[in-house]
Image (cartoon, rainbow, N blue to C red; front, side, top):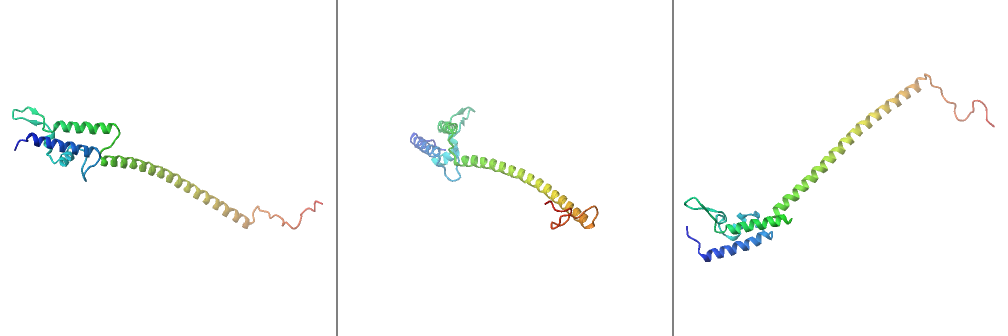
Length: 163
């Protein structure tokens, strides 16, 4: 694997910084996220330069662009702490979570109302049935003639006039 020249490294760092500004402004490519993978793809560099390396003796040494990765992650965290959402997908996820919670609440209220209305309907039907039974009983009592007296018609006064 060929070593990077100073010019190549400077050119790659400039490309990474330009890609960093592009990503932090919210201009993500389709399918991209606000992460190092997208940053590397936009800058056209390998991701491995963002991570520490192991030397042959087992010790760690910093990656060629690890300082830029740390700067990128720090800036993303600052934006998130300030309330800005750089990744439109994250904003969409948050919006959908909020919308989902609202819809669940509405469904719960509607279910509660439906239960109340179902109980009211059962009560109303039972009352109507009881009233119908009472009306039928009274009609039978009138037609059977037991203990029921007919009132005189309105045209005649039974005990004389009041004048």
